[in-house]
Length: 116
Image 1 (cartoon, one colour):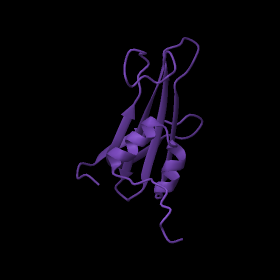
Image 2 (cartoon, one colour; image 1 turned 30 degrees about the vertical axis):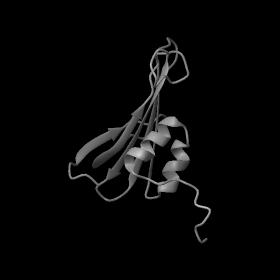
Image 3 (cartoon, one colour; image 1 turned 45 degrees about the vertical axis):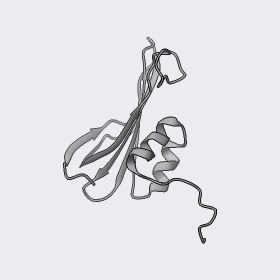
Image 4 (tube, one colour; image 1 turned 120 degrees about the vertical axis):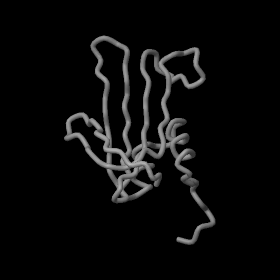
């Protein structure tokens, strides 16, 4: 974990916010602009994934979906886990998630040669 610790507050829809001290490991974001290479694939909508590690060793994974459309609301989700597998289950395997894992230095390959 990086040496720089900060206190963060993560909003979550229909749940209590998370407050923790830790460091941000990775962030990846898409764009709502169709002309950009990181286009979300959804007109007027984009997504931000963030990965943190708390000072006590837990991971915090956060997903924010942002909309430009009137009548729609942004959404905020976050989980806490010590397990990289739980974080991978939360983020999935899309382009942004893959970027997060690469930045974090996580090897998420399914290893067929590993002994069970």
